[in-house]
Image 1: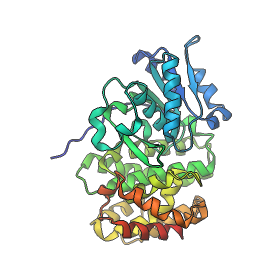
Image 2: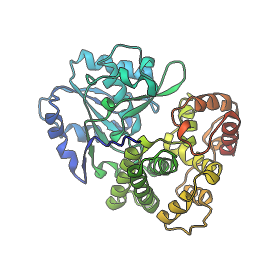
Image 3: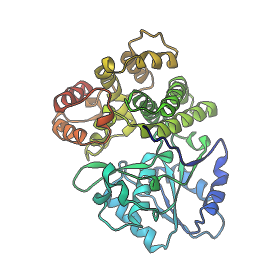
Image 4: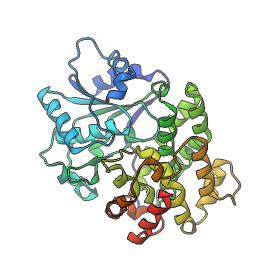
Length: 376
């Protein structure tokens, strides 16, 4: 028996940013907290989004989202939410601001500490009083705008998930025009995040045919359009297709991910260097595909067909070649990851919620092998 559920409302298409006021009105949000980051402010996107809001709307802004959202940032933004008497959240940006918004929606309405709510077993502790979120993604890849979970870095150094249907954004305003200014490296990294979500979901051994279908469609779009989006950032069709791929990854990955994400999450918890999640996924994906190859039945051949490749293609090698073509780094070492991070990363991966849905069982030894292979 499987329970299969897709819940959130998505407004999609060029120009749908104009619907943000209607979304807030439908949720009876009159005093929102906007959560974003300084890069969005510098790019003019904060002002562009604020300009759509009704004149005189009482708006608080928290723009200090870290690259990997932290417990301290959740607490600071939640205090601003309470002090401003806010009644909802507008989360703008990529996965970091949207994940931070989920943490704030939780901690502004529930007693602390944040660690109380981490992990799948804590889901019943999160109630309907969570603050409503309207997500406005400005990248195409994380899927956080349609996901019920958030990855947050606790003070003790662990990067853990909080997850609940009540953390799902009530509305997602997905306007590909907001991604036109995304630079090539971030376009590539977020695009590989979308592709990895779709691939890992499809390879997950759990039974969820709707998720498999969505994942295959998203993977096909990402494979076909990511190079175009990187090379021609103003191509609205490429941007539209990549945003669809990102949404598909977010809708599908409730089926479960795998070893790429189990390793990427503790890597994202490192304070030095600060790593971009999607780019880490790109570096890890070929090694994990090689590790899983004999444990996925005909799924590699089905992915190859989806990508328009011969059934007998070396899929990990094809993914590596794609990463090279879009400028992804060749290894974790090239990203500045030190070899002595291995023990902490392996320990984090062993505790990660994505590990049980990898198609091939993993132990500490296998994770160390994957880490060193990705180190190059």
